[in-house]
Image 1 (tube, helix red, strand yellow):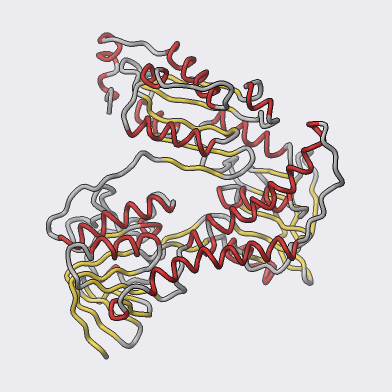
Image 2: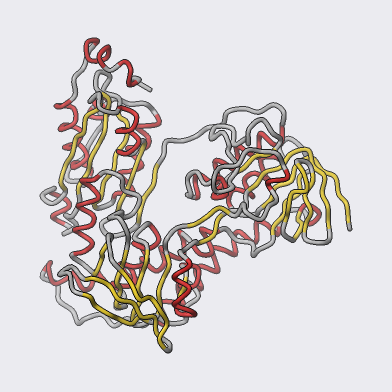
Amino acid sequence: MKELNTDVVVIGAGTAGLSAYRNAKQHTSNVLMIEAGPYGTTCARVGCMPSKLLIAAAEAAHAIEAAPAFGVHSSKPTINGVKVMARVRNERDRFAGFVVEAVDELPADDKIVGYAKFLDANRVQIDDHTIITAKRFVIATGSRPAYPSVFNNFGDRLIINDDVFDWQDLPESVAVFGPGVIGLEIGQALHRLGVKVKLFGVGGAIGPITDPVIKDYANTVFAEEFFVDTDSNVSDMKQVGDKAQLTYVDKNGQKQTEQFDYVLAATGRVPNTDKLGLENTGIELDERGVPIADKHTMQCGDSNIFIAGDASNMIPLLHEASDQGSIAGQNAGRFPDVRIGLRRAPIAAVFSDPQIAMVGETYKQITARYGECGCFEIGEVSFENQGRSRVMLKNKGHMRLYAEQGTGLFLGAEFIGPQAEHIAHLLAWAVQNKMTVPQMLDMPFYHPVIEEGLRTALRDLNAKLKFGPDIINQCMECGPGA
């Protein structure tokens, strides 16, 4: 067994791991990175980039389908599934290749291939070939898809999103379970590319939305385009020949039995922390076996172990993984000098059509924090009659903005609508700069643009807000300006 000694070990070479490695290197040259799987981040290989390639193809096809509404007529588009998937795979490989190139440029002696398992808080064993003693560690092992065991009844007809991007051709039919970000994006894209899609969920949830008004709107607008049942009743799940068969209750209360080429399980992801031997480290774990860490320092308790990215089970987004990796790497590199790192305003987007976006505190978080005291207000706008949106026939959407009574501090937003990904950035900057609603209304708005809808929502919110010391004192227990 080979034995090594170093200052910092980074476990995982994805977005968070690479960021942690580079930042730890700023403080010590003795940093080792361990990776067992293929190089290339989840985003580049099986996540945000290949899914956007599929969505781009779907948008091109949908634009042709929607053209007659403008008085522009053409023949119905012909979808060449082989060419669609060839472009998805080729561009996916190109994006992943950039990450591989970046890893290849790292010193060979800093990279170790294999699975790491903690022997104690200062040692990890890599497979059966190496034991490393280190002063600090960064866990950046990412996550993997998870689904209920009953889905295994579908046999080889069951797939996860990773499998979609290796298809050589588009199938005829897919049942998608899980109307979260992945299921919604891929499900709608496949539908627009001519695949028969049925999207099933439980409990009415759709995307990451927590605001009941936005959730209801989203459920309605997507169900108008293709089969979406976010509170479904599905039974008799099994494989029949080369098909997946299931029975579900339709919107009329009737049982229907259908067969599909595939069942896509998009029911969530779990952190890859269960096989790391964390029980040998002495650090505190939550009920899922994930280390409990400070989100501002990424330190696990007061230990020498830090965590970052999807493995932390905090916010599974690339920009968050990169920030967490930077913080964890910096603190592991200069340990025991642990410092609070920059955590940016929360921002998330779903690249469906219409898009979904969430910024700052969610409706669920705000209502939990303010309780029944009524010390926040909601402003809203519909995009159905918004000028520029109607011009482009993209006038499906609804926005809800949240602000604090007394101070007018802008807290966050949840919305569905056109170009939500861009409006979300404006709102995230406002949250991070702790702007008030009146200050946001002082910002310029061009005409005619979709952002004028945002201004309408801000005006609605501003009209409902109460300002001054009386309301601040009344809401003091809720934490004005927090």
